[in-house]
Length: 222
Ligand SMILES: Nc1nc2c(ncn2[C@@H]2O[C@H](COP(=O)(O)OP(=O)(O)OP(=O)(O)O)[C@@H](O)[C@H]2O)c(=O)[nH]1
Ligand SMILES: [Mg+2]
Image 1: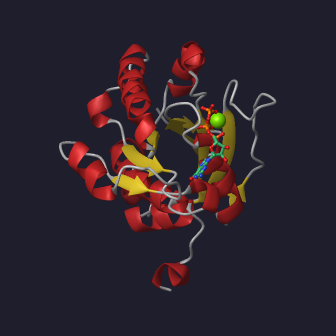
Image 2 (image 1 turned 180 degrees about the horizontal axis):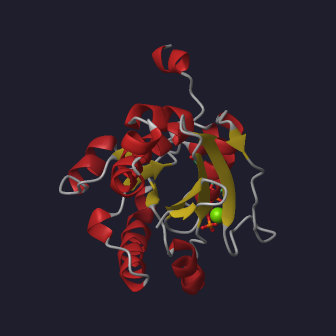
């Protein structure tokens, strides 16, 4: 649930990368940090153990200024995917304005993906998030590996799902911005009513998406 800070005319939006252990959540944030050229990009904060597994969370701050002067700040978090860290996952998910579910495309990971998605639904309910209205994208990562589900198989399995499905190789930086891009219009629609992006701040959905990823209009056409 986005927070408005009147004194600084700043809106903070929380987005969470969720999914099973080792699916590539931290790698998504690292690549976004490398690729995006937004006006306000902070340092990425990684909290990992020696073997690269997230212990608490990672954080990437991004943001831009709307025409009205409103400062829009995103905080992108990852949860720790390992099953034992469930209370941390719940705490990180709390007050989320949107979620990217990072699934691992390898055939061997289908059960883990399913369990993690069920865990997301459970924890959303526990922290008071209305899952049916939560902006969400499902990303199938690790497309560069052998022995993965084909895109057709993924689409068949998820055909009843209302959320955008994206395919990525976060390791290679592919599909990472596209995934973030697929979440942003949903976040805009969810918050526009409350915060008057269009009416009060002169910020269209397209501009919100473009500026969130640091694209100028010219980049968008190219
Ligand atoms: N081949 C391949 N490896 C990937 C990809 N994305 C991430 N990895 C690797 O998978 C391993 C786990 O990636 P992380 O980003 O740390 O995974 P995580 O989801 O943050 O894991 P936890 O923090 O334990 O939940 C690392 O060795 C990554 O380099 C990908 O698209 N392709
Ligand atoms: Mg991680």
